[in-house]
Length: 446
Image (cartoon, rainbow, N blue to C red):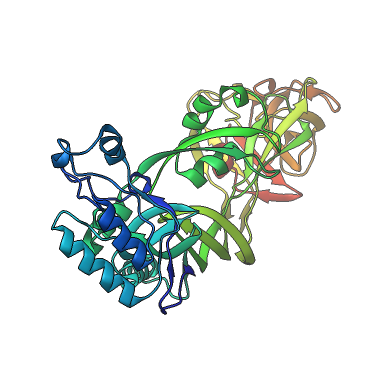
């Protein structure tokens, strides 16, 4: 804070100040006191080295002329100079001689914020004490935080009347009260509506209402904005460095697959958020965050992108990327996937009463790459390639309705249930082959 007139010697230079100009001035008394009322008193004060405006008490209207009465509306003290303590004493003696209605201005201290007088107090220490307490409370438990006033603060020594001077308690109350403030803001290159509104503690809607010309268009550097916000006479800017953990949001990506039907859309990789440790320089004004500068980031765990696969194939027989039940109206499992009779059973067997000759349908769309009867033990069987790393096999059929090279759609009839090959009775033996390995079909069919 700047100090004015720090010389504690005999000379004191008063700032020009008016009673009504302070934010925290006392209410004016019902009757003003007379500074001087006679030429003799004025001569005494000139002897003391003080130049003071003259004003008459309202109670003396019957003896004063009209000009004196008009001077009662405002009192100002301009460049008043008291030469030394002895002369002050002489002025006081003169005032007592002229009666109790004489008021002698005194040395006091005014607090200015950005050039505007906020309050006048009797003691500089009183001002310092209140301001120090405000900064201390702002820091509170924030270790290493720096508190300062956002405004340029000055304490000026000057000559003031008692009516201007307030107490420390009145000063505290004054500094806690907010008032509407209007200003013009010049937009900077990186400003956004949100950042400007956040800085002044107003909503974006309020900002646009005050500045309708920016609604619906991008702001440009140099634009002038009207800002109206609530503000205390002085505000505290708190700066601190904070380290905390934060989430890294996963991204969403779409992957096209030309082997799959256009009706296919599926989240094939689940997204997972990551985590990072962030060190930032944060600035608050009166407890409201107004800016945040990232100093460093340390990745603890990477985010996993969510991937959605969509098909682009609109040709007949395109895979849907999922498997449907291959034997409609029959659901009895006579044998599941896994060890059986000393070896692995590589599929599931589906049967039921009256199953012989029932329609077998393609579990998914694709190209028929095998349709034959051989000595493999499968009897009449079909293999469909779905073009996405998956194949399906249908065995022990009584009749085949498709040939190698045919493109078949999901749910299309391809064969009839039989008991050819190594079979103990009519049923469908169904397999799913993933990248050349036979897997349990049930999890895919569910």
